Length: 178
Image (cartoon, rainbow, N blue to C red; front, side, top):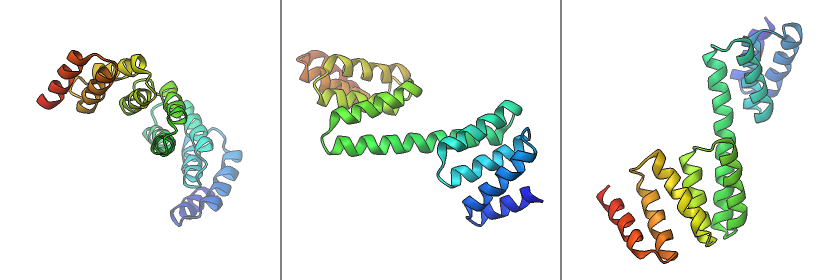
């Protein structure tokens, strides 16, 4: 009954009330993955992303086949990732490329194959005149997706700024072909 009430509160937008009920039920039934999923949803709805991720992780430990727990964990990571991207973009727009780069590095630590973060750190490093690293970043994106137009353009500009005009020209031609 408490589990049902907790979901009703969640659907009504009372994240805190829902969380309180789910936490109470979780104390009684700590090994119930469905309760942990509900708790994760309530925490996520309340903006407590780290606590939500923990609840979804515990639910997955108890039931590795749980699609709901996997989706909840993915949603929590996606929201967290978007917040970081937004913050890095604000720093970049303000001309604080070092701080933007630090955030992109943080994203890449947890998501090393994220093409958006890799592309954006490439652009950021180009602005910081860290051309060798930027070239590596753009090439990493192109390994993941050889037809990534923005990566070819970013690589072209970076090669040109570093004095490699012939290779820059080839990258711009490739971008135009795509």
